[in-house]
Image 1 (tube, rainbow, N blue to C red):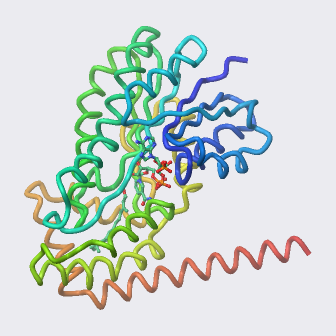
Image 2: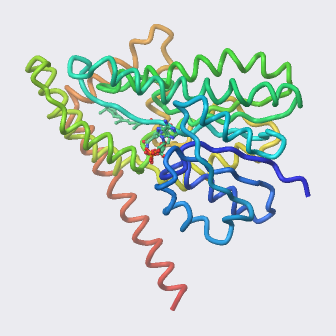
Length: 318
Ligand SMILES: NC(=O)C1=CN([C@@H]2O[C@H](COP(=O)(O)OP(=O)(O)OC[C@H]3O[C@@H](n4cnc5c(N)ncnc54)[C@H](OP(=O)(O)O)[C@@H]3O)[C@@H](O)[C@H]2O)C=CC1
Ligand SMILES: CC1=C(/C=C/C(C)=C/C=C/C(C)=C/C=O)C(C)(C)CCC1
């Protein structure tokens, strides 16, 4: 059987881990997954989740998207240096007022989220072009479509990813290659925890009082609530991505969270661009009580559906 070779970056946790396992456990065994991570000492969670697929349909390799040599070494070690499906997933978040962030910190985000993808493609695209076959799947974000308060640099890195892929997609078509951007909203992973923990530690003394207050009392205060109300699981995002990979004609863009699409739709609804900005402003500063009540309501609905799912499962088991 002709198995497709899949290379995934950032598989030590979250979406990368869930996707690697989902593909490796494909019941038709259609994929040979090379699940990569920059630090192999962090492979325990993947090893456990991969179970019996390890050494069969899944192998773990070292790859740091910020290090060209590590990418080359990893690709050189693949059978015939050939990748059928590249999943560019490795990434990091960053929140806070720009006055409190250094240019070096910002460059690390761009280097990982944007240049990480560029480095991968410089190594893998020529082979795909030669074979006239391949699928490039990029874990972007809703923030690749729409900026969010205090995510200035992260959103810029994902906009860069989207602009890059949009440009490349036309050339790719000439070589029969597919490019798909996966655009999740909030996902409950290490990303959420790391970003929040870094966020609360920020020294806000370089920001003015209004900005510091907005970050602490509006953004950080709502952060956990937003993830609890709208957040998807990494397995859910992996399932959406799996569908894109197994489709005959995968779309260029795919948003994974239907609860979030009303927000991104605002962007496409107004060519002047004011509608989403004014709506976000109103949600945060003028209708914050309605916004919070809606989030609470969503959270309650999800809690109830999870509870009835658990009860049904228990009933079926007994
Ligand atoms: N969680 C969310 O709300 C959302 C996330 N996304 C995107 O999804 C992708 C995956 O994030 P998610 O699973 O949520 O977060 P996690 O923090 O759980 O996973 C991120 C992964 O990227 C890896 N990584 C970071 N830097 C590098 C590097 N230089 N080279 C190789 N790997 C690296 C991390 O490795 P290590 O453990 O070593 O740090 C980790 O394995 C990211 O691109 C993110 O931007 C998009 C929308 C929403
Ligand atoms: C919905 C919404 C908000 C927050 C959105 C968040 C926090 C989204 C996070 C998305 C992530 C983490 C994407 C990762 O790539 C705000 C700004 C409070 C304003 C009102 C509407």
